[in-house]
Length: 338
Ligand code: PBG
Image (tube, rainbow, N blue to C red; front, side, top):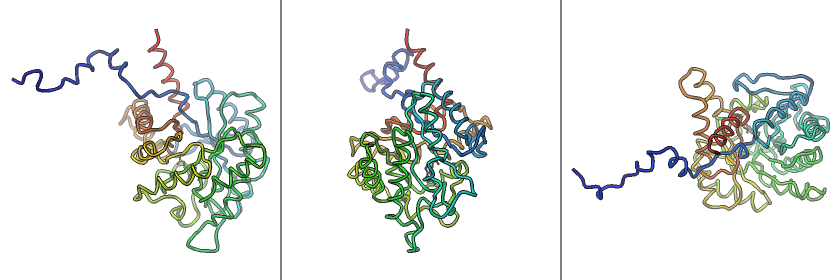
């Protein structure tokens, strides 16, 4: 038989539940989570997203109810995605700039009703363009989207959101120079204090499929690979992150979540800036589908996924599970306190 000194007994510290808990170095809090909310114009709308059970498109009035319910769970922040009715879409995505659109109306309601949530907005054109791309089309077939014409529009869009009451804006279209254009637009109009959380590292991913159902934003032709990143490139993520930090980004998003933890870790090691992970729609849909079949324990899988993102280096996590999972985190911490 081997003597004790010949191997290390790591199990010694796993025997007692208190010791196991004391040694946890990753803590997941409701405050870490950001809840994505889809809004469209109208009243009393609560339209289920087929591929995302539990997720709905809301009109501003019902979004307010959803956000009130969110407040009760301990989650402190949400991010709005505007959905445009098909008949209001056009080649330039004009509906996004309408001061009366669902994003602006919802922000105004949140302010008027004094919700204490931190309001973020997704800044992109894809749900209001008739072709579904994230910007204005280019005449140059290889570029698909005209970068420089698009970033001017994104600056205006971010300003509109800030004027309507957004606390933070999040450009998601992967246009070069978008962060600089938005920073200028905000600074020139007394919104120096509004941070930019940039989708700096956004891969061209099949995991966004259900979101495109939810936002009605699937590209009408081609794909997004002329602006989103190739999953087969690793180090480009550092270039993207550096470029956005140089332009004034305050927080960087890595997207998708679980399949890109290596990238999140690369960024964590290279930069001091706060990082966010986006636990995207396809990840949500897969967990929901497997749980519906009773093949996995939904709550356990969600908690483990979110902890993994924190462990890889995320400060914040954008997740469709925020509202559902936050009460479990609260009851965990109640159980811990005497
Ligand atoms: C808009 C945008 C997308 C997502 C967030 N912002 C879709 C896309 O790039 O096609 C995806 C979010 C998700 O899948 O949950 N540009």
